[in-house]
Length: 440
Image 1 (spheres, one colour):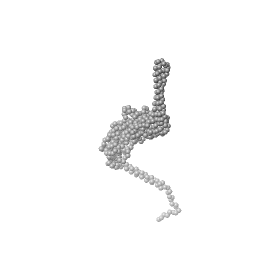
Image 2 (tube, one colour):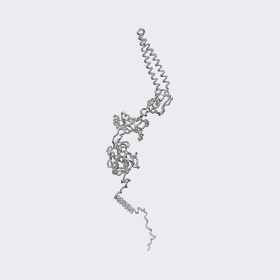
Image 3 (cartoon, helix red, strand yellow):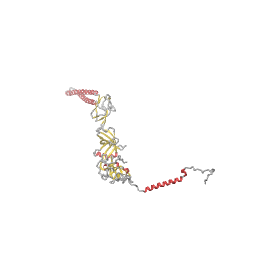
Image 4 (tube, helix red, strand yellow):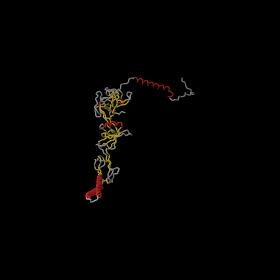
């Protein structure tokens, strides 16, 4: 039988709240269940054994491709770096010694001239006339002196005959002395006129390169001209002045006093290209108290004119050469605390293609190489690239590469070969790798 709803009774009211609000208890229970299932799954996975890593190309499990180098025994150079300025050995401003019209210029700008070469010509005619005048005065006074000497001789004979007074003889003697003094003065004036005439020809006082001309021919020049006629710099040889710290001066002076010839290298502004080789010439006589440095002068032959006055260069002064040092690339040096103690170390490659942390004590740095005073011996293999992915005992992969000029072998003595580690000799680099990174 059918129950009919009374149309007079209204239907129950509909719940207008959102679905999440109406069923929040059920939804919360579902979320809790999901979280518990996820936690239980992670727990089960953590209890499972870790799968073996994939085998490398050489059959080594998880081997890291690295670049290596062999420590060798050789010499290392102790260098003192400095900043220097190229300075001519002599700088001369050519000026005229006399006043006159500049008739002729015999040099071209930038020309190399030798000492004594003719540079310019001053109008000589006024000085030729002055020389002739002085020579005429000299001859006249010579004639007067000769006549006075003859009269003096006559007066001496007459005085013996008591024909003249003694005073007349004394006066004649004084006249002879006066004419003799005039002769000496005339000789000085003649020599002065000759020197002035010689100054009309301007010659180079040094051998060097002339600069830009400061005055044109036809101008009236005087000794008081500030710029002169031209500037000459002596460029062959040439010097470089540089400063080193006062802490190094004792060792440098000890070598100089012993007669050693300290070599100096001049490099360009980027410190990458060597410009010239020279030798240390001398040191200054005092230390600059404001900077704590002392100036040194080095001399270079500069036959190719590679060094130019006032040029900025980087200087490397070779202080000493240390013999029979253990040398390795600077890129192999690492700093950190692999065993909980801060130290300087390298990754040494073992015969089983594993690496071990080897603490080392470093010595002198020579370019890309560094001396090792303790911790390594010649023949040890060290990692130069790829060490940031290693740890003590890690497996490494050293690709076999054919020897080449770019294999990265260290200079000096030939490294001993290790047949048990392929690719370890001569510092071979892994394929696809860049240059070794520098230590921090």
